[in-house]
Image 1 (cartoon, rainbow, N blue to C red):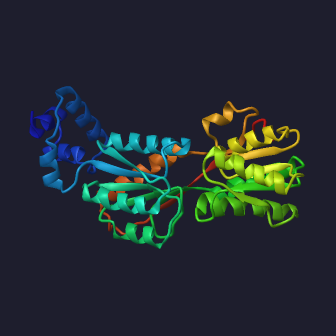
Image 2 (cartoon, one colour; image 1 turned 90 degrees about the vertical axis):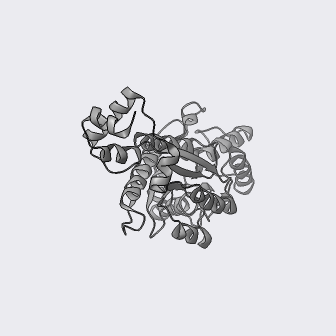
Image 3 (cartoon, helix red, strand yellow; image 1 turned 180 degrees about the vertical axis):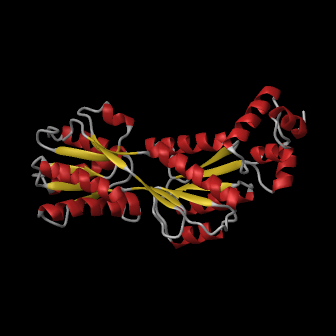
Length: 327
């Protein structure tokens, strides 16, 4: 079976079949006809010949900060599904929040001739930004809004501002926060600033008492214990992530505090565990799967147009406040 025979069966040109196989631009109507013809015939292109012809393989690298994360898994699933529709496979690299590992993945994925990279951003220093600028393939960033780079991000500031305003509306006055590291602009600085903005608008005390946590539940528990020691009269906790909030709930329970009777608590992300925790966690729902899909869609456009097409698109997704029993 050859490309020419597949083209005849699909009623398209061999060039259209080639563009479909290599991730090029093709109308949806022709794409579906080619897909059905390939499915019927079982045609498979020669990977070596394909790489020699295009200078790349139909693979996209996805670089993530950690594997054991509901948000990471949803973003990866959304991106992978959209890429698979265009016959792109994914290669996953986990950095464990290590900048050196992130830099190595950016380079090694290019050396292995990926067509593009999706980078789930956390901490961006000058080295990361320089490395992305030097990339020979398109790179799309998720989770951070970095000026001058293609990004798909969330409205972290307003999501946490709305959550904090909800706590204030429920009569909470002594609010504290378990925050992500400030170096993480989205989860750290922007979410903290959102909480502080709500307090200022309500005329409550600033600065906001803060304990910085790692992204694990264990970190949230330790941070909550520290806040209880420093502010035993606290009546509400804003957590930068749902995972931190789960750890904080455990610490509050061990300290004999009733949630939401004595203390209200909110998180960010709307993880699956929020529905099964006792009480259920009030949170900001972020559209992580859509984030992955939009990142893949944007990356495919950049692959089609060429890395240096000169167009930078930055998209900020919406959110929803989901009220459960923790407030």
